[in-house]
Image 1 (cartoon, rainbow, N blue to C red):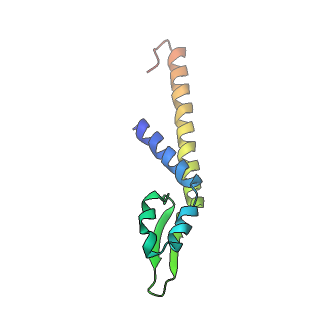
Image 2: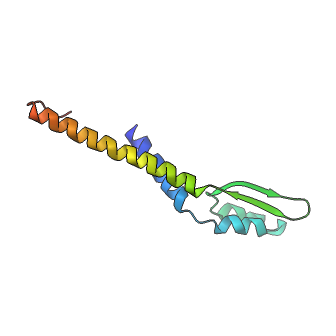
Image 3: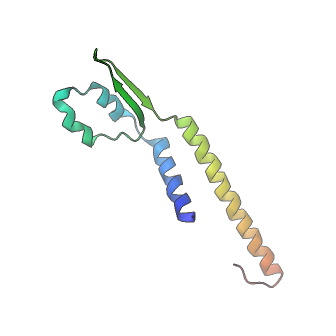
Length: 99
């Protein structure tokens, strides 16, 4: 569970910091250069539409929401560390071994 949480926090950090340049490049790729799609970093892309008239719509991840979630989850992690510390401290005071 702890490793899963750490992995999730790392993914959220990556998502909050990722660049959106390649999502913009995708909007301007024409049909003759579609092989370039595989090399693009599209982590922040949540939706992409191209109209029949050639217009493009690009939707990106909400970074503010990701940052809020990251802060909430990180704060919970720090609180758990503090709780574990004080639980171990109390155990020592009572002459018990820490878990």
